[in-house]
Length: 51
Image (cartoon, rainbow, N blue to C red; front, side):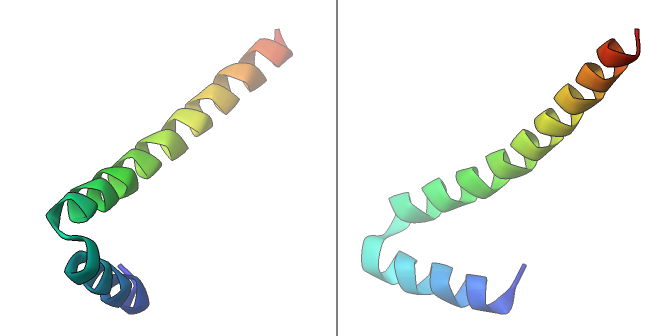
């Protein structure tokens, strides 16, 4: 992860607490899954366009 991002997360944890940490963690995990889902949907769309 990016050093600036980590520093910002630490600042936010001190300001907002543990629930904010959990929300940030889950959002970053889901972002990766959404990217994978978008790629898969694009592949399916391209395959349908070929037929």
